Image 1 (spheres, rainbow, N blue to C red):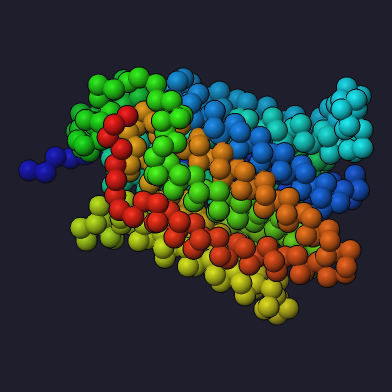
Image 2: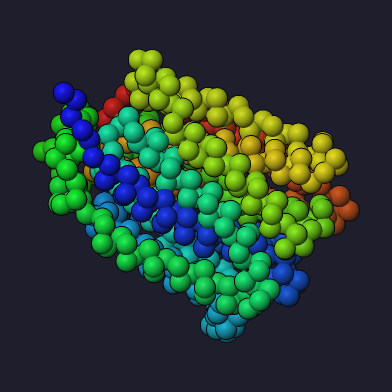
Length: 452
């Protein structure tokens, strides 16, 4: 008789999902308040780009170390510290003005006197937030590698990664209204405090599988059914230096894929509210529903994208090759974003839906590119590799944000800001195909790492 397998691993997946939801809810508050803060503090697009880029640059550097720290502290403690830090960082945004005044007084001697107080304060708050948020994906991917066999990891990753979508949906449905009722400072405090509630459930329900009393023996065996990786993970527990990880083409394939595509998602996340204001003259509350619809569309990619590779795997492909076939399809779908501007005169719903489809493809891509790491590296190196890739993705995001801000200010001064958005949408549409072909060139077939 076929042994009945338990489902406790999906409880862990649910915890990861809710943490990722909080992560993106905290991350998106600023972009939704941008139109109001822009008017209150007279920001240019470049000022906002500098604030957003501060988050991305700090996130990139922190991701490199976050993976190592998660590997050292373990998933339970590492994840807890990450959400404590980023929740405090979210709350600190409410005090950006006094922080900015202190920074301007203390740092004017190194040339920061020209930067507005509000920009300095938000740069500090965003950097603080980024340090904590950098721990989310290394910890979540590590937890997934601990609790799921390879064949289920893309699905589990897709499910918890859909928390980014839920966070992006909940933010426009709540942030503008909280801000209107209580002010922007209180909005940051309320949203930031949610992470502390998650900690209660994390400490109650998470433990490593070896120590998890709620896990049945049959489910524990199922989780460890990847005997090849289990063998790799045993007997070699020494710390793996970064320099050793960087010699593998698999590391560079993952890092390049993240560098090319993370900035696309962050561009949508940070700039869509500004786009709707600049091109369609929409107010905060007017854009809440369209943005919610846009990110609702991405749910299809978040969950379906993790499931679809199973089609190829069930046909006999190994996990990596099946995943790459699926990712090629995901890389083609964002080409629809090229039509956002040419057909945008019909209605703002045209770019909203097309961007939603492109963002949905990103979520499908993201679920699978993360899982290529646990396909090829032993568990002890997973968080470190995710950290390296996350740093590359963050640096790509900085580049996209800075270029976008400069383009928008330039074309706004010329009286046709829509040209700047056309250029950025073109990059967003093509980035995934470039990433896929480079990744496939570096790692043309499944090559697991066996010598760490």
